[in-house]
Length: 478
Image (cartoon, rainbow, N blue to C red; front, side, top):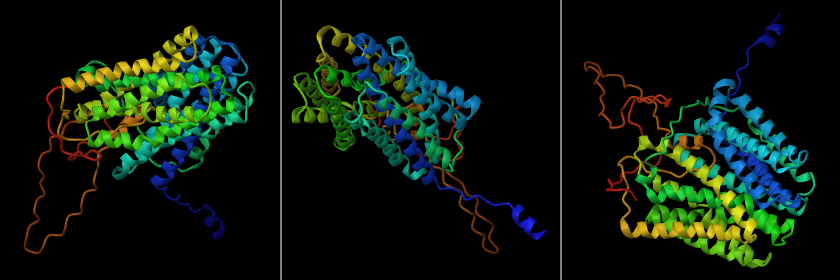
């Protein structure tokens, strides 16, 4: 009897620390993003080998970004109906299947559907991942964790590109590897004890007013979507058309990703310590020069690698710099809705960029990809110089929080910016004999207000935001 009682005794499972959850999220994100980035390259190169027109390749590329944009909003509906775990598993599986479908049905019409589905699945899975990250990150280190998450995502974009030197996009292997990587992304989160109870919030999107608040920042979001979307999806086709080998294409894409990571710090320093608009102008100017430099690159060599490094380092950070500029013109209660609207602007730019660039490439040749990117950046550079002349001093609106940039993945990552710092209540000290306890009072805070319908935090005290600083009021949009 005692033996039986021993076997039936309840066992308490150990409580996992947030570090375990965050580590599992990073591994899952790396596997998912590296597989999806490899598929983007493989699809573009295979389309060229199959004889797709440049316009058809542009449509296939744009459908991927359309799927990402739509999936970010569809995810909230799916999670409410079937839950986080099943949503994560189901759409990871569908993303893996869509990768293999490209080698079974080879036609532009089918590939537009497959890329649309893959982009949608990628966005839905990332919404789940970022929701877990949102509730697992300790308040004292949320900013560092968000930045680390962005670096993991950027590193994953270049990590698998050298596989082009080993496997041909004309064969099955690259699509099979993509499917394997996307399937494996389920394991870290599926096998780890993921802590936290993520909640779905309603996100209201108000598109009007963003350009009035920050003309330079809001237009920069659209511009960054157009040039980055065109670059990411069509650079493999450009390199293929000018005669680069598959291995050289993979090396070029890896170097561009390395430049994006390496030059984040200097641009971030300029943005934080100088006028943010100066960082935008520097990013646009050097990005323009690098894009023009690639138009005259005759083949793989040191020149192309250096210019590609500069392109990745200065053009790719344009989005977070523009977002930071807009955030400086927002009050804390406007931030999530505004960032969601800017995400829509970025998605629309990402869809239009590949379409226009592919049309120009089909009519005038592969170099038009980077002539298109340079022309768009030059227009933005001119607008930035005009704004700098009309509004010489960059003043920040609001007096509560400084605003942090976020990775360009899904809307849910913006919730990392709204997490309040909550402190546990301090225990009351026992009153001394003969003296009644002193009532505790606090000064009313300007942030004490009724929570919105979509906010799951309680306004029980003064709300603090990460890296909160006092900044002066501003007079007019920047």
